[in-house]
Image (cartoon, rainbow, N blue to C red):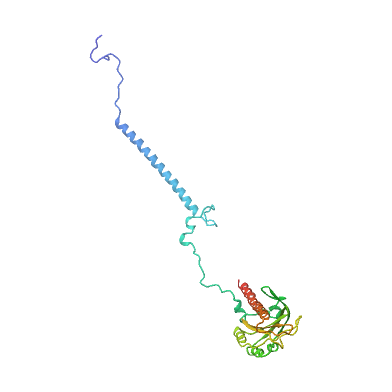
Length: 284
């Protein structure tokens, strides 16, 4: 078989299918259109997401602007930043420049009649049944008080007390093992008068009998002493209840006089301490 011009599909044979050439321009337009739609979708989605975030932020800001009574947000949550105290707003501790008043001093109180107002009598000044110093105890025998200071003295002590303005003279007698001691406490308006009475001292306070103690130190030699604290001057006279004379080397009566004098000093100071404590408690 020979083949004529034109190949196997010559004249009178079947027509082969036509192969069309792609329309490249149309395809390019379609691709460009798809890209534009995709970009618009992405841009639109981004706008929506941004709007959603903005809405959330706006809602949070709006919520934080409505404070409850506690200073937090409307739902009772945490306080907003502007409500939190800043470092500059922190209050620093402050201290007063005015010093507190000094506590009352016992000696100051018992140095002035204006401040020394506690009840004063032999019972308040000598409340115990004995005067004790270390291991030595002297039983209280009798007490007395007078506003006529000279009447409870012997010799020139009366004029000394009167001239310095003695207001009252309180006496108490204590005894131990045949030795008796009378202490007389002269009361003045102030410390200066009491100091003068002590410095001008001349014997002596009159011994006080009673409570089992006989009259002593009236016509015989005895030990005497004088001292002062605050507005009080106090004097002692000590001797034997038997009437035996006291010699310069006698240490028994000397010790007894010192013991009762120390006890009296402490009792007057205790009076000042009690009043100082009462004043301090009243100012608290």
